[in-house]
Length: 398
Image (cartoon, rainbow, N blue to C red):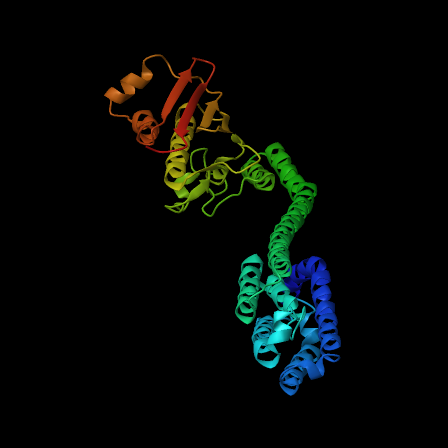
């Protein structure tokens, strides 16, 4: 856990660390500047002991906490908020501890430029919103302390604090985006490495088992056929089409995919490639895009079931040894799945006769499903040249 958390911390500190170090140096320099201004004017204050006591507290606090302002992790909110409280107290105490004449002449406040460090600390810790709030409080305290305001200096503090806070927020967003991109890149490299290993070892073995089993015949031929189906399924998984739980058992027919699969979630988008992946096998080839094909989960389930019904028809009517091909196309306004086989085709008028006989596979399992989704199915069959079923589903289900 510590190692995992350490990576984003190092990435963020690589950019923010110079800013925190600059703030640390600024606080120390600003304290020294305030003391240099105070010492020569010590006897000019109305209450010099009170002013010296305040600056002593500020000096002690700054020296004790300087190392707390070296990084965002070490600087808890207690420290910049305490800085801000001391800065506001010093501005307001100036009206009590200094003489009215010196205040009227525009003399600096007790903490002087040390107040800017408090606003900058809030900016680095919390972003531009905290910077704006802290700078506004500093300006308000100066308004309450004297009538004539150093408008230019106060405006500079206000704008600089907000600007630095905004830069910090943008930097953190960029760091998170970069860290996520690096994690994705690392995962992709690992996936490619595993894919190479699988291709060089497992897939080669499965292909060899398929060839030897087919050559030997008998029970070995069945084993070879199962190895071939597993090879195709594994190639689909390596290519990016994940296989969900419930993948068809080895040796199942072309349409056995979704019938034995667990139903998908009823809500949210679903990658249609994952639902069509189980159909791939020795007798079924699957071609999908390289990126996820997202569709509403209910629509994706119905579309995959329609594909299963089409493959069932191939298994029943195309004859033993028939090959089927599934093509998934992802268009901006719709998703298209084409199922094609190299069987004998459907004789003219056979579908109408099947409906009259009560066989409603194409009418209900395929066209009926898609009609409810606002889509449609088009079937083209030429005797002796196979059958092609094109299934279309719109992106938004009415």
